[in-house]
Image (cartoon, rainbow, N blue to C red; front, side, top):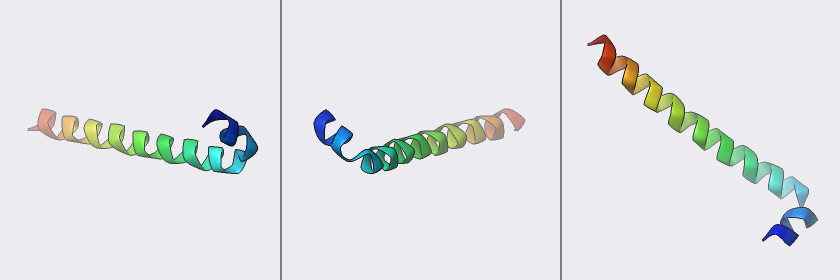
Length: 40
């Protein structure tokens, strides 16, 4: 896994970006739902 990761840096960048994006969206939705419940 790590070896192929270094052989194809572009795929690694895409993978990291995808992970970061999904994490960001998940955190954002959590924060949004928290603020929604807090405002009620």
